[in-house]
Length: 417
Image 1 (cartoon, rainbow, N blue to C red):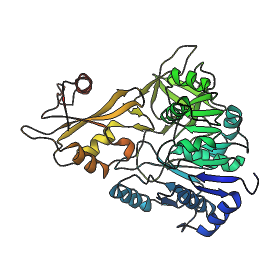
Image 2: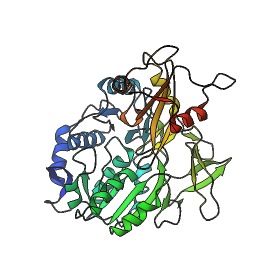
Image 3: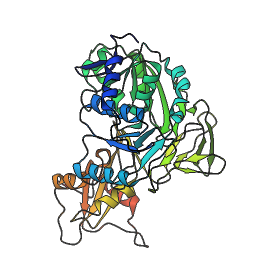
Image 4: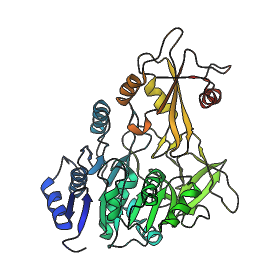
């Protein structure tokens, strides 16, 4: 990288490597009072947030970037929980799991758990120091933070979004995109409308990829490499050519009773503190987050969802029970069932059917969003709200989830307005 080339760019802000290094040095210890201390970071200025994170790491701390769109009460609760945890010496990076709700899950990992996978990613994307890596997902995403750290190691430029979505001017700089199918769709829509671009390859995560995205990408001159991974497991499987997912370099897979187990050098260290989560490991080094697979010899890693019923939406994995527990804390809601509502663009939308009790009307959508926003991250807020005085239940008294979901899809349950 030359001294004049941007190491990081976000909208009108462009810093050379020397300028970024100066800002990191000026930030100093940035709240690190012990080796391995996890330091929460929240800043609407993306370059400032990134600079602080790199300063925390340089000081021996573990940076943890939040989403500036989160409700203030939600962030305050996360910060308090992190502050109660002991330092985690040996760990280098921390991210919030996509399932984080009122009870946060913070995933911590060593530097090597990411850096060991760099050669495999570089081979898949032909990534070099000449590239400009576009990261349209926010810094709170483990996908984005991985690529930030990787780009720094390779010497490639980092291009952060100037808004919370893809922006037209960004495509004049980007050569490589790493993000979600949703972000790729946004890019392709702009290109198909006539916008000039420099993208040559897109690295896109997700257990399922719409085949149409691959053909549209190829038509736009963008080579598409799709992959499956999880924040706890890192890269698991990759599909560089549309012929199906295969294990990523250095990864072993096995299937037990339909559940995918993985063994690799890329695992995270676990969760911060004592908060439980879906990541489990056995004595032989195999780990799982409960993903269900069921394919054939030609397509052995065909994903069928999560054993915990998680909703795979545009940029997150949402565990219904987590969201339900938060909604049940809202006045006017006696019970709730959360599920994935099919959606062409996002895969699924988070939806909720709330129970109000006999004769009671539900809060308005605006009220529900406001109250839920204090308890849930933005990716976990229901996008569709339904209500009933009494949820249908099974003989054992549990909500009849399949019936509730079907009623919502068929429109036989009332929408909240």
